Image (cartoon, rainbow over all chains, first blue to last red; front, side, top):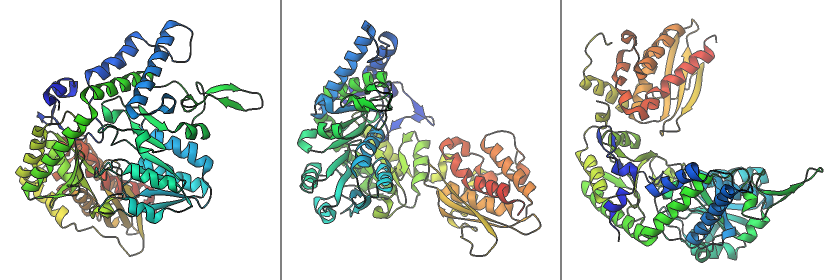
Length: 408
Length: 148
């Protein structure tokens, strides 16, 4: 394991003694975004203070250094995921990557009558690009039934057919934190000659991922959820698929030539998908974030969060005033309601005590139906979360009081 | 400032009262109602608001329905109460004073009645939109349909 207090010292947001509503900040919204360690901020500053130049755009040393750095970052990300370098596309985040697959692959290859399989638990960034592609191509969106709020291989086989062309699920659900059996799903999907597009936003930051072992066709995630900068992300895609699909955006940096007859030729993947100037500082930061996580160890981070999850469930269950929606999900997300209090009102009460939790539907607006509630409070953990943070949450709930206390 | 001393206990009671038993939380089935949908990106609030004029430029009925937290339930219910019988001008004045209160600017408290219970909403800045969602919808309906 690792020393959490040492880890917390690496984060300016945590060591600065920051307060919210007059109380020490307890940050339990890591499924939304995460704090950045010094090394990430330093890496970005290094680009701005010492190595600024545009990549792929010049013949001078500074530019060469930036280029080298970007390609180094691509290698770091490839090795982090068990992928090849040319399968790593830099994006602005998980949403950008999902849209790239939908518009680059889906729009090109889907036909009327083809089916896209999703689940009610999916985030808007998985749902909406495919809704749009279905509308544009005449393909049809099909939902698998959730079993005990989870995606199962059995439920998936019940909807797969020769019409299925795309299956898209989150590896770890952002509301409930259940882990989908991606490897088994990939096998089944491939038996039906369809493709598996994985939303890795909540899995890549929290566990060791090997895309070749999972055998997913695409996997998209965000940098800011793994201690990296906002506006960064990666789309992994099998090279042959990346090569077959269309670019989503065109412009500088991704073309080879263009001609008077209004045609153009494009660079091979991954550059084909990286039109315009990249978020260069962001990529410096993203690489630093990945190296930081690796220095702590993904297995250690996962074990730490699973331990916190167990502890939180134990403590919350003991209060006797909380409904838990995912007690048996192993990852570091606890989703609950305090009995008799609307989720938003509870989150406001927690805010008044310095505790940052999210409430609502967490961008998965079709899931509440399966949960039997319109909204939930979500506490989500990361490597720097402590048992004391969870104690603060549970104590606040135990003290209870009127949720209107937040205003008076 | 308030014309009488409104204690925190009274303010809580007003909010809880309209939250637990809202008077105007209903989708009207009668004719002559204008309606608008209002939802929030920050909160779960997802409501429809209805307004009916009496033919002489006054508000005859106002109601709302939907999913909402305590603050938006109580605040939407209270604005529906307060606009009843008011002319468009009076209603706009009232809503204007409420928005000033939310922004913590000087305001005329004499017209706000039970809505004064929300004077502390600024303490929870993330919830200001909950306290104004119904008010904004009524204001929009007044603007769009005042000549009809």
